[in-house]
Length: 306
Length: 261
Image 1 (spheres, rainbow over the protein chains, first blue to last red):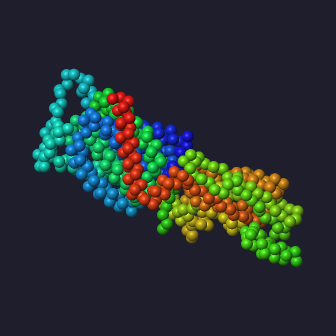
Image 2: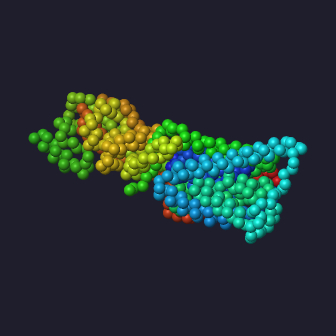
Image 3: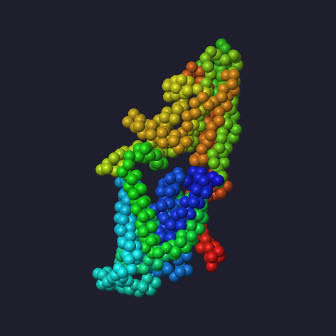
């Protein structure tokens, strides 16, 4: 069954779109990532023009994140206080990010910049996470191994402005979460994603939050970042396709519910290995595109009159 | 005397058949044509459409020597495009050179009775801008055409592989040198606007008559509503998109709670 998309101006198969929404929603609910880094390339692949794919992808992520957060909230796995602190940093970072994005656009290399940041950040985060989680997985198999301490005191605990994060069981300064939020917001604005794939490992490894609250908290923060992005795109470039979003959302919310239920059954270490493999795979795919000679060297984009 | 009379008649009839008259030919041949539809509605289930262009050649004497040929072109609304070329710089393939083409049609189909190189002379192509590269050149590039040859070719190649630009040779059926018909398939990725249909009659590579008609391609119903809202009230549109997203997210969560409490 074909559906004509009014903004993208292409006709696509409804079931294919539904499937894409479902897969991304599934991963979103399972790992606590928004899925922006997956949905955008998938939409390019089926022929949706890139600006529409980026903007509509953000809209879909809002829906699947809300669905995911509600599922996590039932399990009391959302640290709203931490989420809000991250968000405050996030908006500041995203304002800077939008400014840098405009500057890169003026230089005419925004595509390359986005692709390189994907490879760099996805690759780094994925590889680090993969290494750590594999080690943790091996350790959990070995019963005699020394037990890791719940959290280790570091220089971060000496910082002022301490705050109690009850859901995470942490009493730390608000400066590290603010900085992480700002960094993620910055990347989100540049890469057009929610930033979950950076936020999740940052919360686990840098803030020492327990894995069970990380996913819900990450989704909570992503809702607001992507909602902001959606509005920005709708107002500045009219590239949000409501029809496309609707089908993706329909698939996505169902996928997110299933994903979050599957996520509960898996062990935290296994979950992290899977997420890191996914992140590394996407990074390699983009790196591959940059390194291999493309079949068609030329590309056509709607232009502006000089 | 007879030619003068023909000219007088042609001038007299000018408002009605403005583009049909070509006084320099001995035997007057004009086009009488019709379209299966002059309006295409893009609705939610739009998956392409087909336009039938049909017609006949009207003449006041037996046809002259030489084979008659027909070319039909369908041209979608034009817009500016940027063609970029990737080059390998420091080991990675990045967009390097770019050429801005001020106008290129979003859709262009050429349907002919025979191989276009044989039935259409270069000078006539130049005058009437029939083939796609001529169309782009005549409307899109002003002076720097020579330097950007590769980019124009690339534009035609990329859009041809999308099904946007089509050359359908020997696909106009011409019966008894008089009746003709051509089917033009419109792809599902249509841009809305006025589509220009041009019909050419040719003999010995020369255009002896031409006619133009238009097809109105419009989004309708829900498609129209969504598109208009996104253009006219972008903030409300954006907020509405979020409301839908939030409602769907909450709805799915509530539905799953009912299924598995």
